[in-house]
Length: 331
Image (cartoon, rainbow, N blue to C red):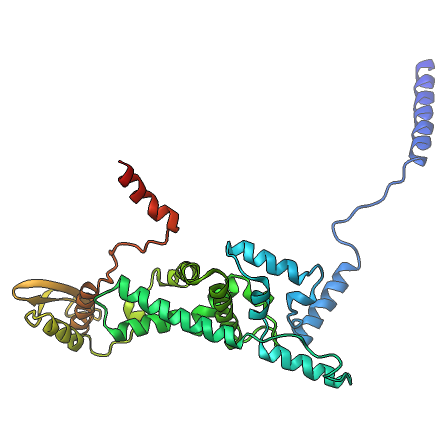
């Protein structure tokens, strides 16, 4: 009896103590998502579906933008010594100047009182384009002396095509610094801006540094490219006959080397080209004509020195190229 009384009194005392403690502690329920989140997300998704994504805004219209600091960062990022004034001029396109003049006319500002003290990049773009073309032609002739003139033109045309130029320019961050009337920057404007940057580098650092810049960023786009992806040859066998005739080599003779599945839906033939009883090249194909054409392409790659197993291009810095010669001379 007494023990039951003491047990009940202890439980009552503990309950009062817990109530006093709980009064001082505010308990709030924490959920992973708020109650309004579902309706808000649904409305935003519906608005995005009706209106579409917002138009892209240039980096210059976003917060924390300092154009002068970005220009300096661009020079340090590329490890090139640009003249800042020339580099700023290289990013100013004629369409941007025309847009600014139209804005000032719309605001009623006289052109004489508030004239634009800016110069476009037309001259720099022409100079950079001419230097780029001449450098790439000389590099191709030095790297592939057996390649004919039409092949050199095809490679240079590929490297100076808008697709390659815009790809390189966007990866270098030139699009964010380009002053253009439209955004995203059109491909032709971006190409001219890239050529203007080349012209500014030539005037700032000279032709040697500009050539290394083109070698590092443009010529490297040839890695993994086949010559006939850039040069369209309609009749490979005819071209091969011409090349062998120039070199006074006997004409090629196509012969079937081996075949598999000739009576199936997917046959495979291997045709070899022989000249003076020597195997020049061999190529596969689903038909004899396709295999002969592929063998002619393989033979042309061997003649021009543009095979898949050729020695890789040397894109190492100039100092690293000179170190072996210095070490050999010291020994």
